[in-house]
Image 1 (cartoon, protein in one colour):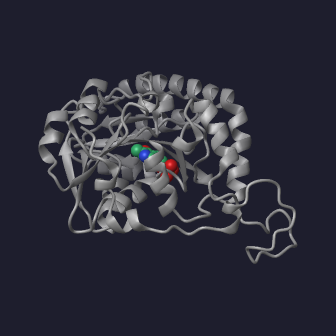
Image 2 (cartoon, protein in one colour):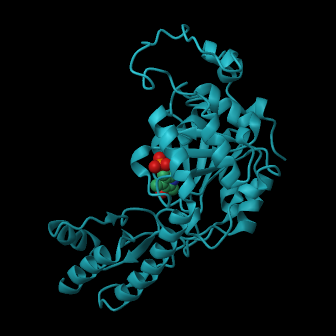
Image 3 (cartoon, rainbow, N blue to C red):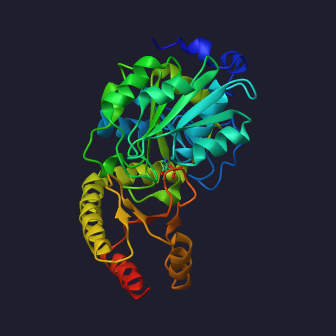
Length: 344
Ligand SMILES: *Cc1c(COP(=O)(O)O)cnc(C)c1O
């Protein structure tokens, strides 16, 4: 059912002769580098970084149990979101579809690229309706964006419904798993070889505690990662980031401990929120945040802001009337929030 990639990729990208550097052509250990007009001084910062981040990918591949060639690394997962639209969508001609509500970057990137964006409502309980999505796509639809666990609703999308989309849609299905570490459900990475047109996005920005280093991962078939690598800036991941993330990958246990702590805090925060009389609803979450329904979201948001507590207003999103999104913090931070809410 998957459409052949050569029929989905824009013609100019299929024909693209990507930027190449001499160091790509050289295999082995060179000792004299006179090819890139670098300054020979100020070692090691003087050298351009590895454009394909091979060492870092080898380490990620081991942890994620995929082949290094199935990985593309971006400046956050925001970079592959943009690249996917640019690679597959002819502006003003093709379109993308996405669940609604969801992470806003899919729409922003579509808008920037002048590509029509089709939001398709989730069910009222935030579950995925594959049939509704498949009805909304047409022969000009190149990409469907799914997000699981979904931001801002917090729920995992039903695997059977996702499978219906993977089987029923011939284009590219993106599954954004930014919050997968917090979820009890497994990743779609294990299905990478079964769905050649699936892209799974993950990031170091959430569970790994590395939002400021800007490093995101796209996992897909070698054919798709090949296009992503051809279109990205050659040196998108700088050397400091490559080395630092490599180092941080040695501390997976610490990441897992953080996740455990945050899941405990999530349950505790939900429990405390339940004792606050004006809180109407706390939605179940598989992520490190809670979506909370209140009668006056603007008012509560502003009062919290005045006390130096920032939460996220999500009340203008589809199906999210009255909702604030609250990230799970440390025990102390969560206590401060609860105490402020009690005084409102
Ligand atoms: C936070 C988030 C990301 C992360 O983006 P980065 O660019 O990797 O920091 C991606 N997708 C979703 C749904 C998110 O909520």
